[in-house]
Image (tube, rainbow, N blue to C red; front, side, top):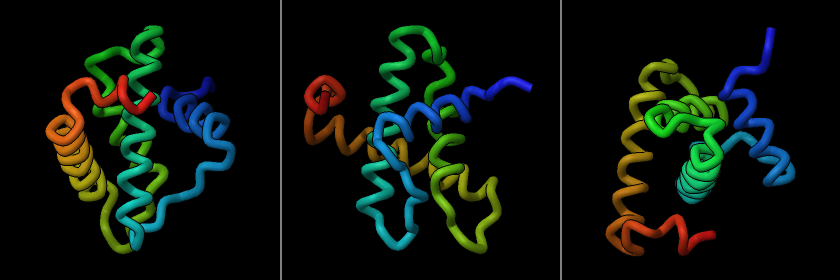
Amino acid sequence: MGESTVEMVIRELKELKGELKTVKVSSPKELFSSIVLVVRFLERLSKDERVQKNDKKALAVDVINQLVDVPYIPEFVEGKLISFLIDMSVETLNQSLGKDWLLKLN
């Protein structure tokens, strides 16, 4: 069976970051950094059409959900929480750096 899109993104992120470790729930800073890293990476992949623009958020949720381990919380709850955190992270960056924050961070 071939590699899924989530597996491909995680593999390429690991290559990009060297060794991307599982994010510790006790570190919100690492979680936020991972969210920004995944969003930036998926934005680049969507430009070369390896990821469809409409699938970016769902894929970001899936990727981050595989990277983040929240003990004692069911996966579907983790997914909802991660989706909310992505929205909040992007909104915070939009407000503080402007809607072109992806360009500023590159």
